[in-house]
Each structure stands twice: as C-alpha cells, then as structure tokens.
Length: 456
Ligand code: ARG
Image 1 (cartoon, rainbow, N blue to C red):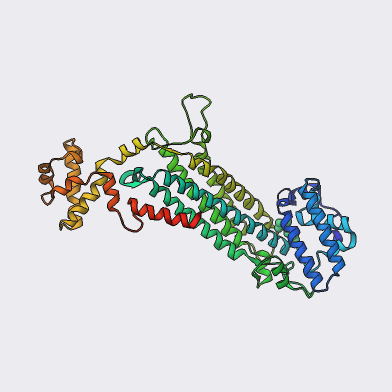
Image 2: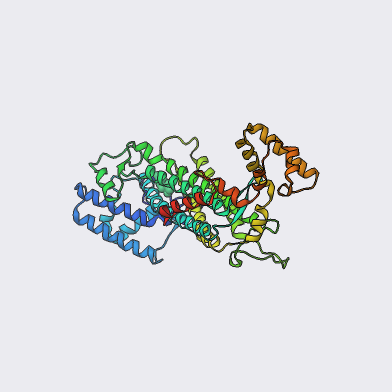
C-alpha cells in the first residue's frame, strides 16, 4: 500500500508503477535523504512539534536503515516509488507510529530539492579535488619537459615555436576556470529548501533557519514555489561539466594528433592504449578518444535537463524526476575520465628529436623577422608584406629561409640588416617572447611557480 493511498480505491497498475518509479536510480541519494530527515526530525523536536523521545526514536531508526542500505541488505521495491518512500516506510516498520511523524511539515517536493543539493555539494567538492589532481599531472609533465619546444599551431598550420610546457599550461588555465565555475555553482545551490512543503510552505510552526544550521547551509530559500521547482543549479552544474568535457575533448585531440606517426611528438604509455584485433602494428590512443567521445554524453545530459525544464509551469511537476539520471550519468562520466586521465598524462613520453625537428622549421620565425624590420623602422604592414615576398622567393628558389645569403635577403628586403640572418633559432625566438603570458623560458617558469603555489 503506497503511503499516499488514502484517496485511492486501486493500487497503480504494475506497468504504471514501473514507469513512474525512480528507486532504480534515486537509491543513490539515500545517505542524503537520511541526513536531511535527521535534521528535520531534530528541528521538529526543537520546535516541540514532536517530543524529544519521538525524535530520538526516529534518529535511531534512521541510523538502522542507513546501516541496512550500506550493507546491501535493504530491499528496494518498485511499488514504493522512490528513495523517500522507501526510507519512510522502513522507518514506520522499524519504530511504528513515531516513524509516521517524520513527514510532518514536509513534502517529497522540498525533500528531493534538498537531497539533490546535499548530493551535489559533496560531488562538486569531489570533482574539484580530482580536477586539481589532473592539473598536478599536467604541471608535473610540464616540469619534466621544460626544454621541449614544439611548433604552436593556428588553423592546424605551423605558426610559431612554443614551449611544450606552455601548451600544457594552457589546459591548466582551462581546468582552473572549470573549478571556479563549479565553486560558483556550489555557492548558488547552497540554499536550504526544506520547509517549502509541497509548494506553499506549512501552517506548522517550524524553524527553517534551525534546519539550515544543522545541515550547514548559510541561507534558506526565500520563495517556496521557486524552491520546489528550481533546478537552475543542476543546469549550471551540467553546463559546467559540459564545458569541462569540451576542455578534455580538446586536450584529447591534441594528444591524439601528437601521437600520430605524422607528428610523433609524444608516445602514450602502452598501458593507456589498446591494439587492433586485425592490424598487428596498431597502438591506438583509446583513452583520449573515449574521453573525446564521452564529451557527447556530457553535452547530452545538459541538453536533456534544459529540455525537461523548458516550459514547465510552476511549481513542482513530476517531470522534475527526470533531472536525476542526467546528473548521475554526468558525474559518473566525469569521475571516470578523471580517474584515467592524470596517470595517462603523467606517463606521456616526449620525443625531443621530433619536436625539435618540427620546431626548427625556419618559416616559424617569419614573424620574428617582420618584427625585426619594425625595430629597424618599417611600418608593420610593409614589413609583413616584405617577409611574405621573401617566403615566396624561398619557395620559388627552393631555398630554406635560414640558408639565405645576406645578398639574397637584401635583394628582397633592402631594409634588412645582418641581424635578420640570426633570427632562425627556435630557442632565441621563444626567449624573446618574454612578456606576461608569453612562451619564454622565464615566463613559463613563472607560470609553473604560480600553479605550484595554487594547486600543490
Ligand atoms: N521521486 C520524485 C522526484 O524525484 C520525488 C518527488 C515526488 N513528488 C510527488 N509529489 N510525486 O522528483
């Protein structure tokens, strides 16, 4: 018999019960549901709505239920719909009538709004810690390869030399913004909804501030209708994870490209790759590929919740039960990514010869030459044009830019001085980019020191 069965003559059809149950997934919330119920019972007793003895009875009953679920001995049944009904029914079986007092001044609508917030608070902290661990892996790999220079790319064309560490540190920046977004989301979801009832609060003299204090919420929700129907924080959370996935996907793409025979800048450790069942020579970067692929799930989860909420009238509607699976799936996906990614990064081996060969392409220093001409007094547009002509001259004459004689150089760029012939070392090119945010050894060292102080 369902706890709400008073006005019904028939139990729900079996197919209806299967269709509407959420216990198959919301059982994940049991700890938070019990934590919320204990605080609620304490508040009811504090307000003398139930007695101290009844409250103690409820708390010890809930503790027993928590133990039984922990140990896997608790029976979940679809006819009891959701985690809230399971725990409340078990409590009534366990302690009798006192258990039937727990739901005083509470609805499942404010109860679930509380449970997801408690659940997300813990998971946001966990994800932030694990992103920090990934940042550490990127930082260690940057430090272990401090001297490595690679071409930086724009439009997937070789552009200018950069330190490999500079490239990895760019991802540390992205992941730090992901953490900051999650902290921001935490702040906005850290509001206590209990006491909003089904939608319009309660006639009983409860004390919401007291419940908030017990559950470590800095504030209580201001509007009961908003509180039971608000899932903005879950939208934000899923957007944050989608953006994180986008960053992982971009990093994965870099790693995949760098590990191809065409680039060969890095080698991914054997234990983070798999082979082909058909082609014996293959070693595939599956972890990076799967992470790039899983980003699709993260986007899907975000869109799914946005779509559930679009056009929902106030206040609680059962559609909101559909918020949980996207949230759970996104968390599970992100935690899986974060368990394999840091060790994969740490074990990457850089191929210094291949990196240097690619970074020594003299055309990567064409901008340096244009900037030298600016120092000699040419307007940048003119110098850009002159160097473009020089590139064409080199192509037409099949000569490398760093092999030009001074006469050949002068024939195309009359304003050039002999210093222009000395611009083709990737190391010195890098070191001249010594401004805040630049890729010089000095600046990258400063970035490393900064992150070392932030994330260790
Ligand atoms: N299982 C529901 C959910 O996840 C709990 C709230 C249900 N409320 C209701 N009145 N049916 O949203």
